[in-house]
Length: 422
Image 1 (cartoon, one colour):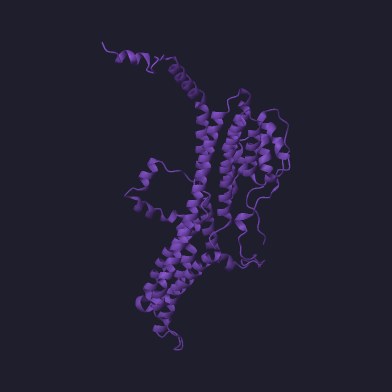
Image 2: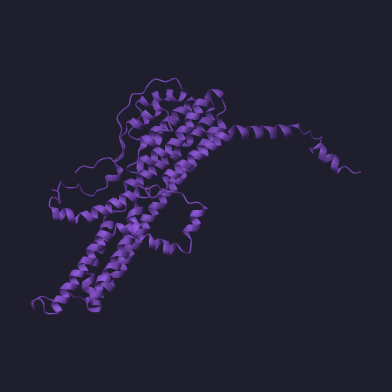
């Protein structure tokens, strides 16, 4: 089995000729730029400690296919939930979030929770083990089996000694996952705020009528960058569809043919800035904003390429499995048939905590990235719409202040008349 890059790849598209300034920029990206020639890293799936072996398929028989049916169903629900669109909270969402009826609402929607449904395979497995142990011990106690069959029982002292270790493992696992979630959220916050600041500087510093088309193209590239970054790090994104209404056809063909689309858009912005008719100092200030985009790419790729150490994840998983496999034996003397619901509750609770840690370990499918990109586009469009109006009002205020005459002592004439003695 070989690792494949899940980021959608598109064939090289021929770039048609065009006379517009934004289309003219496409020729820069057929040069031997290191940003475009360098292949995209296979970061999400290059962290295996060992190469997977080409083992024979395990689902040839009907029995094995039936046993794998429930895990496959749970995984399908989990992956479908990962692809659902997320939304940013508004005031109404926060009111509902802290409602006193939230516990009832959460309980009633338990059967639709992807976290809970993904726990169905392990919980069923360990509950079945508990049922088997209870049936076996009951059969031995009722002399339904030969005398040499022992009752499965053990002291609970080892469990009392190792319970704190299991609790610490789960707490550290969840805390490490949340720190990754927080890091991913902060990285995207900086990308979005940096893009808004960049767009504001472009609007404020580019005034030449000859640069209007180029200015519009740069703003389109700034809007397109977070979208391309989102498609770069979120599996299953349709980059062609997401960028279709943001870029010109010729520019889009260059981006789609690139192996690293976010850096390709950065190159578009960089080449466009070189063509602006502005002072060198202003151009340097505008180019410095590209550092925020490069940092965003680096942080996102670092999070995707380096999960929590696999040894820690495997240790937690193995500890949980062994704990619940032997739990019915430990509890038999005290609980007897109550080991079945006890094992069910314990497995559902502890595996749920571990599952949440696994889900937020990859933070980007959980974040409302689409909503962030849409809000960025809306904010930049509003800046462009209000640019001329705000500039006209500022100019009017400036002319009005210049029209006021001042006396030699610096006081306005109107004010000076008011303070003169009668």
